[in-house]
Image (cartoon, rainbow, N blue to C red; front, side, top):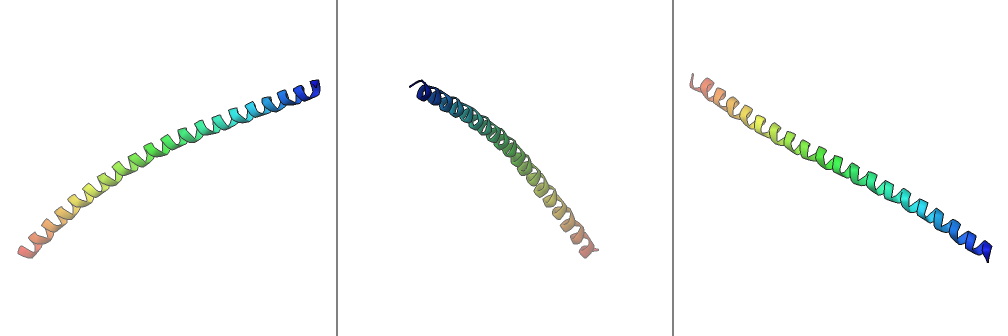
Amino acid sequence: MENALSDIKAVANETRAHIMTVEHKVETVQTNARSLQSWIQSLDGTQADINQRQGLLNHKSKGHEDRLLEG
C-alpha cells in the first residue's frame, strides 16, 4: 500500500512538472505571438508609407512628363 501511494505521489509530481513546463512554453508562445503581431503592424505601417511615397513619386513623375510633352 505504501509503495502504491509513493508511486502515485511520484506520478503526481512528474505531472506537475510537465504542467509547469507546458505553461512556460505557452507563455513563451504568447510572448512570441505578441512580438510577431507588433512586427507585422510595423510592416503594415512601413508598407503604407512606401505606398504613399510611391504615389507621390508617380504624381511628380506624371507632372514632369506632362511638362516635357508641353515643352
